[in-house]
Structure formats: structure tokens, C-alpha cells
Image 1 (cartoon, protein in one colour):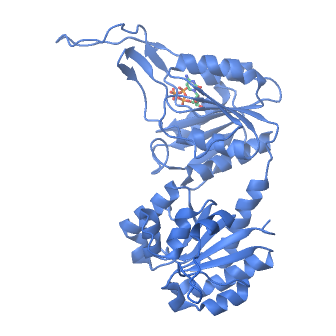
Image 2 (cartoon, protein in one colour):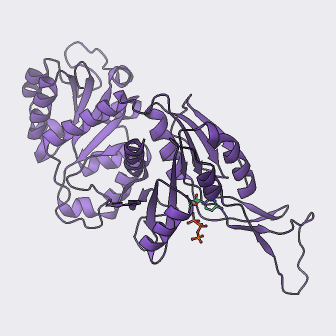
Image 3 (spheres, helix red, strand yellow):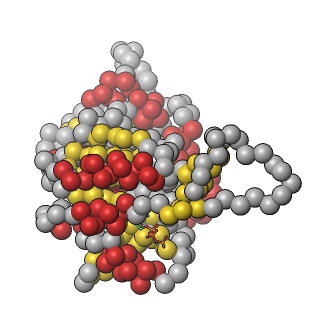
Length: 401
Ligand code: CTP
């Protein structure tokens, strides 16, 4: 998996810097090429001579090579790399990365990096737990960087024992996992419908009934399916979240109301292999939409609502042999029973349950905590990023395939 891969290893000033030798040894053993970029503080902990002996390449630490004045191009390194790993990453480097403070070669290289970036923090617990460090790590995660931490990662509800750098073998394993996933095209040739986001139900030309769904979970699912080779039909309610990049195999249809989403899905689903219904569809819509903006009259205001079509239930009824249908349930109480009920009623193959009682789950977060429930099985997962949750859901899909 790592054979021939070009890895930039960023090393910063932490006592864990000696462990970067083990990372290099492991990477080289697996056939990777390693270019070290080290900060001035990093050199206080480990010598460039040791590092270059291991990588068989000069170590880069300054903008200019000291001897002949040649310029080290961070842009070229950014283009050369298949991945960048910063291990150990100190609180200071993490802060600079999150805020674009490019005062050394490592940060400029990071800012020019075209390849995915993995960050293994190393610091004491107090520094790690400080809101500033936590905020910076979240920012870096929002930028699409992967934080490598022992256990369930920095999103875990307890910070106890945190901050210690992940073991070198596990850091290398994360890289292998990334490259193996890149090569994994287990959904090639599959067509998958995904609904995402809220629906807006019009009251008058300027008002609507909506909900807090951000669409992020649906987008993460679309990206996961597309990166594993599927052709994705993404039917999206009104959302401002965006895909992290363009995918030629994601075809997007934007809709506003539940009725429009229903019509789009009904037309698309018959030619699909699977449907993942992640949208938070409004169950009701105003019976009449006022043509003009409704004015204040001083009287009470009553809006009569009529039921919307249940997209999931209709698709469940249309479902043919060999097709898969996956639903979501966001519950506040009696979660498992409600989810079981929806599984049967809507003819889902499995249902993804999130409870609003779990912190970090549901709407308006970048994380989610789910259980996957099928007729005779229940799997509970820890709090993860929506990207990681999407991977778990798609893995489950491949089992039912
Ligand atoms: N769903 C749908 N169309 C609807 C309502 C829901 O496709 N009109 C889908 C959702 O995308 C989700 C699943 O059905 O996958 C369950 O949604 P939920 O709102 O929890 O279900 P409801 O049947 O509306 O149940 P509740 O009474 O709890 O609102």
C-alpha cells in the first residue's frame, strides 16, 4: 500500500521527536519515500544527520540551503507529496497551522500541500485540553486534515490521558488505511441515491417551515460512496454546506420542498442499486401558500398543515429484489423502539439511529454518534466525525449488497 508513496514527514519541537525515527523506519520498510521537514525547535530534539541517514535524503528546515543559498521550494514539496504527516505536532505548530502563520519551512510546506495531511499531536494534557488547542484542532479538522490520536481521538468526551503522541506503528497504519481506501473501489458500477438536508415548506413568498438539518451527513455519504466508485444521485434540500471537492460521479439535483424531493426520488430510485435517505423531510406543509406576503393583522395567525408524502415509505413499497434502502431516525426518546418501528414500516434494510440525547450527535454538528439497526442486529458506534460515520454506514451497505 505504501510502496512508492511519497511522504513528507513534518517534525516539531517535542520530546516525542525521537519517535519520528521509528515512523521513518516503518515507512521506508514498507517501500515509501520520506522527505523530512523539521522546525528549528525540532532540531533541538533530534539531529538532521540521524534523520537524513534514515531517509537517504537531506533534511529540509530552512527556506535557503545554508551552503549554496539555493531556495527550498515548499510549493514543489507540496506537489511532490502523496501525503504529509506532522508527527509530533506541538500546540504551537498546531496553532500556526490553524491560523496560517507561515514563519518556518514546515508551515509554508503545510500551506502549499496538495496532498492529505495527517497530524499527530504531542503535548502534555493541560496544553492539549486548553480550549485554544481544542479549537485549533477542530479548525484543522474542518480544513480536511486528519487528527491522529490514541483511542477514539480528540473528539472523545473525556480528555483524560490525552495529548500523548500516537504510537509510530499506528500512525503508519492510518496512512496505509488511507491509501488502501483510495485504492478500494468496492462500489464500482453501483448506483446510489442519497437524500440530504432539510426541506423548506413555503408559507408565503418570503417565509417557510424548515428544520436545522445542515446536510453535512448526506454530503459525507455522497463523497464516501463516490470515492469508492459508485455513481451517486444526490437529491439535496436547501443547504449551504458544500462538497469538499468536485466529483464527476456525483450528480446533484437541488430541490426545496418535500413534494419536489419526493418527485425527484420516485423518478430516480427505480434505476438505483441502493437509496440512503438522510434528508430531514418535513412531515407537513401549509395547505395553502399565500400568494402575497402575509401581513400582521393584530389577530392570531393559524396555518393549517397537510401531510407531505413519506418518501421513504413510498420507496420502500417500490423496492425491488436486489435493491437496498437505508433510512435514518433522529429520536429524542424510546430511540430503539422507534427505530425498529420505522425499519419495518418503511421496509428499510437497515436504519441509522442517532439520539438527540447524545452530545455531538444529530443536526448542526460535525460529529455524529450512531447505532445501525437491522431486523436482527444492532451495532453501536462511538462519537466520530461525520466523514468517519459515513464510512461505517457505507461499510454496512456493502454487507447488505
Ligand atoms: N422520511 C422521508 N420522507 C418523509 C419523512 C421521513 O423519506 N416525509 C425518511 C427520512 O429521510 C428518514 C426516515 O424517513 O430516513 C425517518 O424519518 P423520520 O422523520 O424520523 O420519520 P417519520 O416517519 O416522519 O417519523 P416521526 O413520526 O418520528 O416524525
